[in-house]
Image (tube, rainbow, N blue to C red; front, top):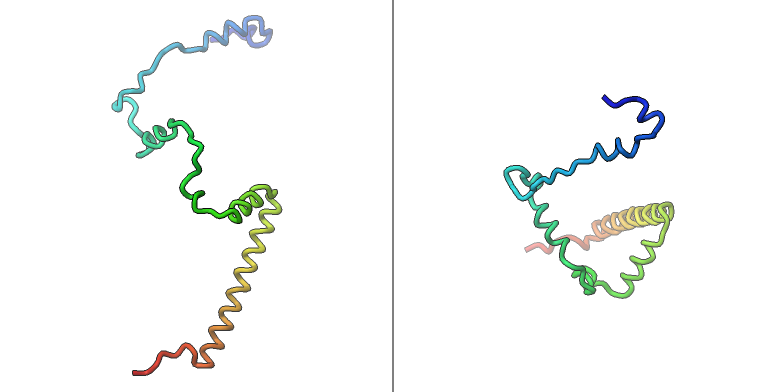
Length: 118
């Protein structure tokens, strides 16, 4: 048991703190002692140890300058502004859905979508 004077007065705090250190070395090389908890984590960790190259990732090679500017713009937005942008996109998608529904109904009444009879 720890003597209460050590914690209250703090005279021997350094000695107490060093007494808590463990210098035991654990060998994590054994798969029996340390099995891989999640499959694929070891391969992912090994791939992360590779040095970072200056070449852009594959997905970024297909982007045009307009796309990169859009990413930079979205990345600079605050959370509130980003949420407002998302709500605007949701509203736009809803409006496009309504317009598509009207046009499909119109096409149905005009018999534009009817298949030719054989």
